[in-house]
Length: 428
Ligand code: B12
Ligand code: SF4
Image 1 (tube, rainbow, N blue to C red):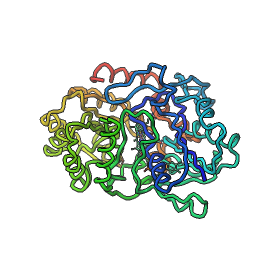
Image 2 (image 1 turned 90 degrees about the vertical axis):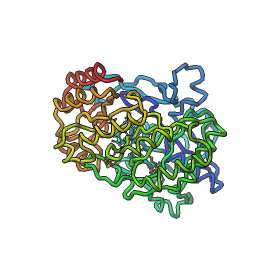
Image 3 (image 1 turned 45 degrees about the vertical axis):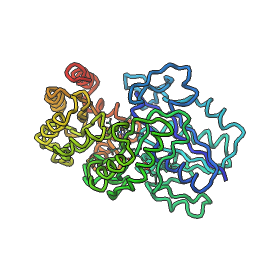
């Protein structure tokens, strides 16, 4: 039995390697290796692939950088967008050359954002054409959120979340739900993604966390510390990126214990941590802020969303403005520079006025931190997402792209005005 794992290319208006790794697919690779199964791995978004060697695309100090891209024709449904549409990732020809002459029993295709289906479709179509004997299995975030849609793209099997029972009797019986990612599949690696918890105890009405991971659990941090040690020693990896939804919850069993494990392995001070998926502001008290500094957190991203207390209350109330002020003070007292801290604010959340986003940018910029606009993407299956999709009749998932949705709500001029305001007022 031979398996091919693929992380497809992405069709979008913008894409940057902001520490993007197909975390689930890498765990599947571990499961296959542990069961002694033969497999190949191809990540269209691998910036360490030979293909990149002569491209001279810059990589920043934390391992992030630009992807290779080709401009493509905009799908009809997006023709109103005044931006270029691109295919991000290694050209198909490179992939075809790599798999030439091989045959596979299964092709497993990862899915990311729900609106990235064109890349998934591309790989399904290539598989159907060139590897007709292979069964196509899709899984990951988008397939879990829209299983029927992804099945219709041509998948034989859709794995929803961690429901690996769906493969029973198929011949490919694996369960990666307790595996760690296998980084050996990459020849060159600048950073590694890790996760020490799964799920989130909160239930914000626009978020899919509880659909993807219905419960909250802390993983075996000793094993994750072993992985960090191995990657540091064998591959000289310094930057570790948390994909956790709620990293500061269950902290005694989670982050604090993880810290002690790293301390025992003499890794504190040698490795750096990043939190692109945002930390919970309310959890950053004085001790936690000091601890984050001591542990080696290098960039801190905070989920602020909006400064409107009423709207925050309606969609989840995960913080208040005074929580934010306290957290920022604690972080600064612990030694973090404003340049290391970024507050995410939403742009285009239904019910969020344009004026309110403007006010959020103005107020937050005064704190000397970075402000990042998170363009809202309505996620199928979430209360706010479903309502937005139904009320605006967004039949094609492409219309739920984060670059598209705020434009539908506010119009181009106003979105550009907000983006420019952010550039002018905020540090980044
Ligand atoms: C890390 C992350 C990011 C990273 C990188 C994303 C990436 N690698 O693709 C960053 C920070 C860049 C990011 C950005 C954004 N993100 Co994000 N992100 C996430 C996060 C936290 C994790 C995604 C992930 O990799 N999960 C790991 C999973 C897939 O692995 P796993 O649990 O081990 O998987 C198990 C199963 O799913 C299965 N499985 C997994 N993969 C596969 C593959 C196959 C083939 C099979 C069979 C099975 C399988 O097996 C595993 C073990 O059982 C999710 C939230 C979440 N809890 O998942 C949001 C999430 C995906 N993001 C979301 C959003 C909204 C965004 C932004 C739009 C935010 C914004 N407004 O800017 C941007 C969009 C970026 C863009 N360019 O379009 C939404 C989804 C939106 C959508 N419409 O799809 C999510 C769900 C969060 C939410 N609020 O609900 N994000
Ligand atoms: S706190 Fe964050 S991860 Fe948790 S439900 Fe709210 S948005 Fe989702």
